[in-house]
Length: 125
Image (tube, rainbow, N blue to C red):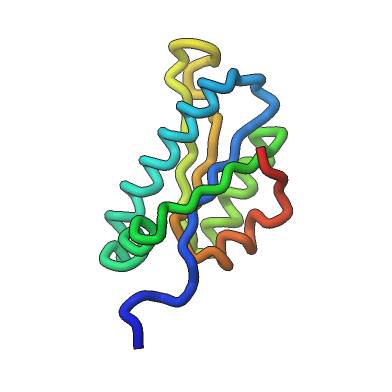
C-alpha cells in the first residue's frame, strides 16, 4: 500500500475576465494565488501528504475564467463545502485596479476529482 493517495493533486486558478486586466497583471495575480494556496495548504491538517504530493507531481495548475465577482465567490463557497482550501486574491490597487478588488480565486491543491466537482464546467482562460 502506498503512503500517498491515488488521486492526482491539482490547483485551479480562476480569473475574473470582467476586469479587463492586462496579461502581466493576470500572471501576477495568478502567481499570488498559487503561492498563497500552497502556503495555506502547507499549514493544514494534511500538510505531510497533500502539498508534498502536489510538489512531487509537477505542481499541476489549471487557469480558468469567470465573468463576475459573484460567480467567483459562489465557486469559493462551493469549494469550501467540498472540503477544499480556497484563497481569494485582492489587489493592492497600485496599478490597474482599485484597492481590494478580488481578481483571482485559488482552489487547492487538492484531489483532482474533488476540484473538478466544483470547477469542471468552467472554460480555460
